[in-house]
Image 1 (cartoon, rainbow, N blue to C red):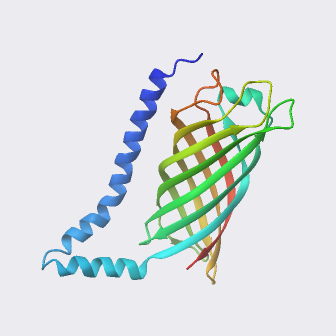
Image 2: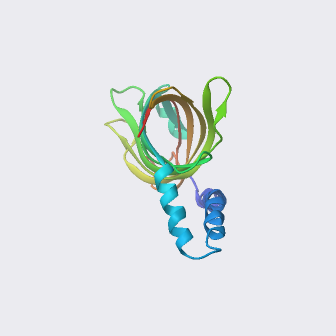
Length: 217
């Protein structure tokens, strides 16, 4: 049986750090809103309306490879498929907000079963748009997720577990002349609180590397 007390405290600290980072990303917009109140409250309403008019909603589909890290990987085959669906709101050129579903699945050694990871997450993205002949946007992101790990029948005692995660990563979107774009993305999910798939595997981390196809509305 693994002792996870110190590990949980460490990841709780990481969660607080991530929350502070998100707050820092939001501060520029809040500061702009505060400046716009100088001549009266009506300017706040004007600022909100302008943001709503210029915001862009993007829907995307991700496909790639992913896997589990930690002691649970001893019971698994190599990397498996990864997938995701994203919805992104981009109120300005630097900061965007994303709600997403991501998952991955790996075969369990010696069986026809799989260990699957399915996650809902909310993240904040930070990155500039760069025009170098082809417009593209590199970015980093972080946030909070909740995931379900589930397993088919196996002799290793692997089962289901619900846990909270810190999704972290980076990526790049490449723009086209139409409403469509393509991108690449790497994501690492740090498990910091919740149940375990088995007594001896702790809180497994997961990762995925995907290619994205997105449409802007």
